[in-house]
Length: 335
Image 1: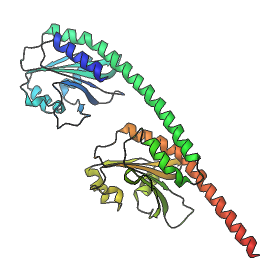
Image 2 (image 1 turned 45 degrees about the vertical axis):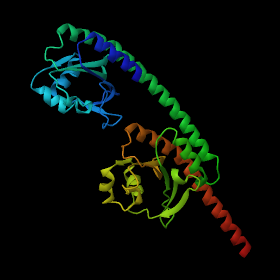
Image 3 (image 1 turned 180 degrees about the horizontal axis):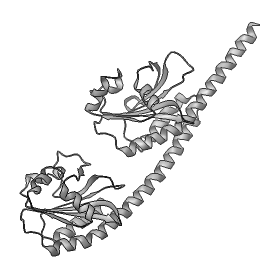
Image 4 (image 1 turned 45 degrees about the horizontal axis):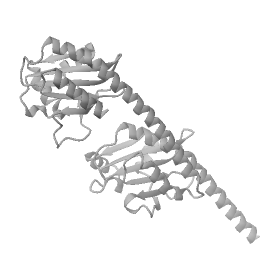
């Protein structure tokens, strides 16, 4: 998609008297528009995945009418320093902005944004030309997004199959956390993986298996205080917990956990592992980066957790059977 947008941006600059161009894309019709390409390039201090949220009246009008909107009024300064701030265009003199909605049928897939230091830079013919050309680039973006969705679904199916295979290939579930982490790390960026086994029939807390990238050869298995923990909160709510940066400090006021040490970790996701509407454990990934995990990663991790829930429950039942067998042998010998 990047290369397609770069080519279209250059074509626009050759056809229309604009000094700046940006193309952004959204997915599912939401209001988060990821900047795919910008000329000039984004400021170096901006995040790689810069996002525009269209909230001003003029910009919303463009998407409601499905037609380009020219802004040269008093609202221009507010737009440049507000909605379009991620582009860094407030550092340049701007007297005119054109917003061209990119529509695939009735679905919003992105926006083309142009800016000039001259208030009369864009004629009606220019704006009409942009409106006609927008359909072609919108169709291309839509097709690329569809292809990416299909590829992502295929990759996730392979990931779920691999995770299930690793989890069921060992007698002790604790032996699987390393291979599971290796498989999952191909789809998700994290530095630590934890699986908490929640068994309410057993007293003395819950069992936590931990894998760390810095010491991947030595996973840790330990009991921890389940009451009042993050794992308990996620299990009770049956909802994911996602936090990053300063959010970890806020959570630390409610949970005493090394998971929330912001000097060591920057972001985390904890999701419930459910089987037949019952939570049997939690799955947590943590990263040293303070970049928040996107919703797509949370949804994917939730599906992985549910895939693992069956293997965890099977391992738990196998352990109980083994304990019962050992107990029966001791009783038989004592008689």
